[in-house]
Length: 206
Image 1 (cartoon, rainbow, N blue to C red):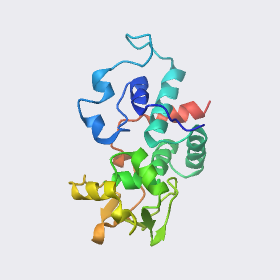
Image 2: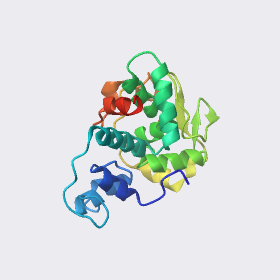
Image 3: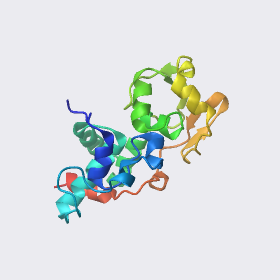
Image 4: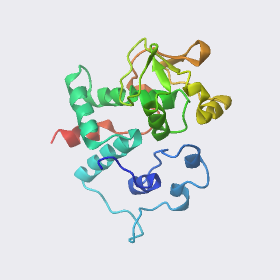
């Protein structure tokens, strides 16, 4: 299988940073990065110094795992970003943020991107009045995303909706009946995690 199916906490330990793949667990003392802040495997100790290529590969892998996509998908996003006007690295991050599963996560309807992906696959969300069950679907300016009638009966979604939802990023705006409207395409300043996108550009530019 091309998609990673092993324990998600191993990814964070291997990357040496929290990727928040397990939802609330990542913010608790149970987080693997809190309990075992070293790479998985038999050889414990300090992390070796990486070459320039190693740094580029690590940054690419970190962002890829964060959004839960395959290598071929990530490369396709990069090639599409390179064709768009503007800065390639910023275009890449914007495309990744526009994925429907990420919008569901950003809207506070799921605890993590992997959970959001599963909910989208099960058809729990509607875009512009039409059910969309493709996690990689790219939302556009003016699109309205909402929970489907079936999704509103989902136990996990109902529990999350009863909790205090996080504030929306600037490119999303909350509407009536819990709907979320895409105000504009996400920009570089909307990315709320540390990333050096230039390393990714250099990796694919070799």
